[in-house]
Image (cartoon, rainbow, N blue to C red):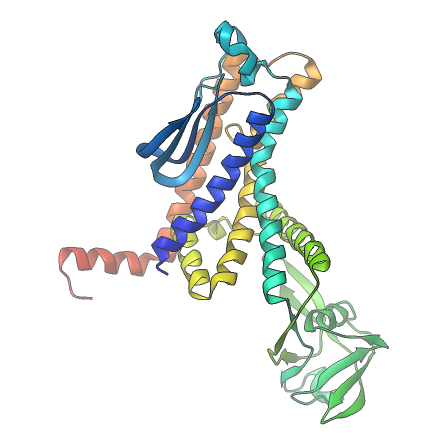
Length: 372
């Protein structure tokens, strides 16, 4: 599958599911939907069914559901709605109903991730990286203790170890503490004592921390363990929560300056990653869609005007003060929100250009006839 086809599939699925959430909840709450658009910009194709026009547009990076009582970035007053439209107007619904409609988009993104994680586990099982040792670092606590390559850790301080991650977690939290390992070696169990030394390392988010290490590499052996559907549902929910927590923490660390803004990626990075995921197989592509779907859900919940989170903030304030916010102030806030998103997108595109500068230069050289 080509990179272009991969990114079209990924964005198509994510946008459709997100907007479907808004659409279905709007219908459920009795709000009229005038347009359901996949994509932005000029219309490629469209058809009308009932009161709703369904559209596929040129630019795949977005989509929207236009309801009765909505007018792009202009904030309409309930008084501007025609009398015959008020019953199905978004603006004439209470703050709770409007909040439900707006929150449904991100909620459907989380639900999609949950469904895909569950389906992946049912189809392929849970992949477990077994606690088998690869290379042993010279002059390390592991080398001094007598570990050798291909030892498989059975237990640490009497606790059974089933995965590499379990072993790493115990070792990292035991800096300077003596640990008693039982390893399986050539069919026999051998008892080995080792004390992890303190090392500085960086987390995946770029934060420097001190952890315990004994100086061993992972052998990289993975087994797939089949699970029943009930556990698969639990695992799907757990993975959705884990990835949500990780992405939220990444955003927090970015605001704290721990994670560089250079890590922000744009459409080129997304397309590249989608292409690589597709090349690795259908299940990898589904995993990628799940993670990006969670990302989309969380970003949309940020309290930035224009995003769903910004609307939810407005509705919450309206509920607290007991009346709608000033129209003009909301319009200004919407434009500020658009400006913030525009700057972030520009920053992401610049980051992409820096990441793929060689490829971009080669592309243009080919166009103008230079040899590469």
